[in-house]
Length: 150
Image 1 (cartoon, one colour):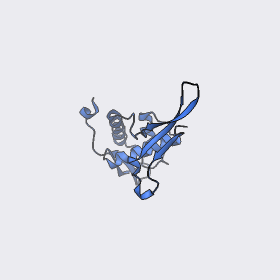
Image 2 (cartoon, rainbow, N blue to C red):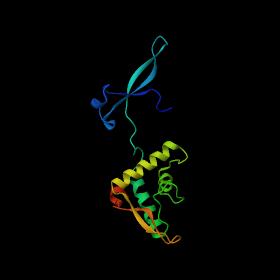
Image 3 (cartoon, rainbow, N blue to C red):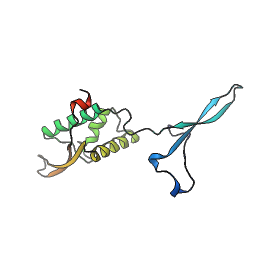
Image 4 (tube, rainbow, N blue to C red):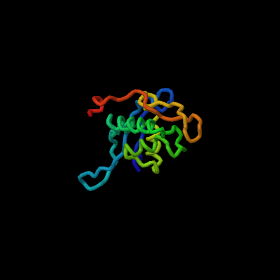
């Protein structure tokens, strides 16, 4: 429903089109004019940012949860198939619903970005139940309390 009326403005030739991140988007909306008729009007539209509504405090809260889980020897797992998947904790902190495909995809994209920017990192951690190392998520570079405004 949110995508209804959206379109991208670019050159018809693919190699001349701007990259997706620089693309220009517009939305058609209905506007009622003085005589009572409705007409379509093209309006500017900015694609939502991955981190809209997510603050540094949210990120620090995720880091704290990850650190606590690691200290309690129940580190969050990398795999979305795991019952201890880090995405479930991220969704809880960010108030996202993993049952909604678009919100689950957003959680995965946020995690990917946090791994790229060294907020979190993957590391093999010994699993006390199985006796083998499993890929888990741990904190990489801490966000300070000052950065989070705490």
